[in-house]
Length: 165
Image (cartoon, rainbow, N blue to C red; front, side):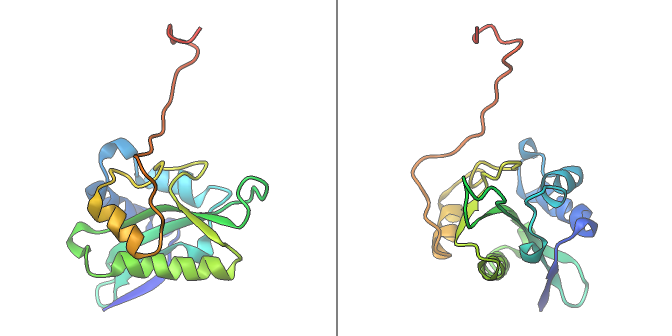
């Protein structure tokens, strides 16, 4: 059995351990970045950021971090699913679906009409990280529309880059 509860700063260390096993290190989903990019972000939505834990041991099985856009001009009635992770040993047991559904229900009560996976202003991912058929099927099964192609965040050093003049 499991229980859902609020995802807070106190859970960042345990969540980071799950992320270490779920996401490649290049995404830097660390305890520090969970605090900086999620909890301390102005758009963080504590009402719809949840973790699911084993009822008996209290061990975190997975978590979801959400944000709501305060930029009503660019993203009216919009929220972001900033990060979703379920312990590798606990995947395919319905925990991810339960977290997305619970977060979506709470976001709807807050007036959200559109949820975007990744792509928030201070994001970990520009969409589904390392997309594959299983991941896209997961989101499709929850009613998400998955566009064609992969999304990538790109950066360029415009000061020390001879290709940019």
